[in-house]
Amino acid sequence: MNVLLIGSGGREHALADKLSLSPVLHTLYCAPGNPGIAEVAECVVLDVTDHKAVVDFCRVNGVGLVVVGPEAPLVDGLADSLKSASVPVFGPSAAAAQLEGSKGFTKALCDRMGIPTAAYAKFNNAPKAKNYIRSRGAPIVIKADGLAAGKGVTVAMTLEEAFAAVEDCFEGAFGEAGAEVVIEEFLTGEEASFFCLCDGTTALPLTTAQDHKRVGEGDTGPNTGGMGAYSPASIMTEALIAETMERIIEPTMKGMAEQGMPFTGVLYAGLMLTADGPKLIEYNVRFGDPECQVIMPRLKEDLLLLMKGAADGLLSSMGARWRDAAAATVVMCAPGYPASAEKGSVIKLPKSVDLPEGVTIYHAGTARKGDNLIANGGRVLNVTAMGKTVTEALETAYRAIDMIDWPEGFCRRDIGWREIEREANG
Image 1: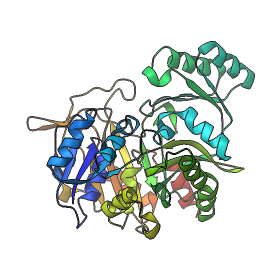
Image 2 (image 1 turned 90 degrees about the vertical axis):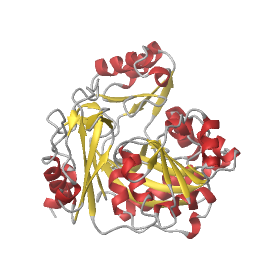
Image 3 (image 1 turned 60 degrees about the horizontal axis):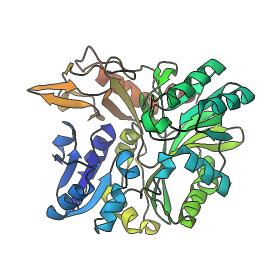
């Protein structure tokens, strides 16, 4: 089977790496890809906003499945265009992608289906939003309603922070994504990430992870797209997984089908584990980044067959097995991230054979300039390692980081600190 993977980040490198192992794969194309992906796939120049060009490429090259990595093409309706042209695609329709594309849409679904989530209100102007904040007090959470590349959320600990976040949204800091804001109650607990593959009817639970969204150690500073992650997250017990499926995932699948927009693809639930049980913080309609980079190394199954099963409505007869090991990834960033990353610095990677056993370096924001590998984004490398425990995996990942010659790069040195404490305490 020929496969076209859409995307260029660390998530897509992890997906490409896993897809390349499938015995049923013939040729893996990636648009646009990156230098790391180019080692396992044929990178092609393709404007993914030009749906006709994507369809034509698939027809000319006999593509049997398109895998859409990032959220923007899904919200833009790429999956709809492919399905209309009878090209199988892993990813939801534009209507179903509203689960990520509009936080207000998801909140309304939660109201209708009785899905536990934070209390909220939605506003299209600053004065009303600020009045609501005054009535609720701080801490409080401010979210741009639309897609903001993981940066449109502010957990405001003071009223002043909340007012500033509202002003940022309505003054265009997040473009059209901030035209409306969703204001939520501040939930107390620990966050976790939970993933399912979906075929419109069946939701196949995958695994758990936990990421670190803030740029600074001790979970301080502004939110980013994610500074590191590990899997599995032991705080998500089997009982909590069952409760999440029953109270959150299954009602979502039912509610979406009832609205005529059955969900297919990967459903990523960001959860807050509260004293009252798991509550939905938000949905993403694609694999998390960097969570994908710790999920893929643990997956025993043929990812291509699972994705094709989701696209064809066959998940009820499929399952997913996992390696009895932990995976952890640490994100290396360019200076200035997340505000304004400085591009162009030269990165010298060690040879694969010299890396510690179980380490993979996924490229997230790199490019080639002559013979040099350079930083070409904010989050640049994802250094991923396996281990018997999360502690062991992280120790190995940091050993590998210390072998990378990139003086300008930075990372957090405390990824997985909650899990490390849990493992140390038995």
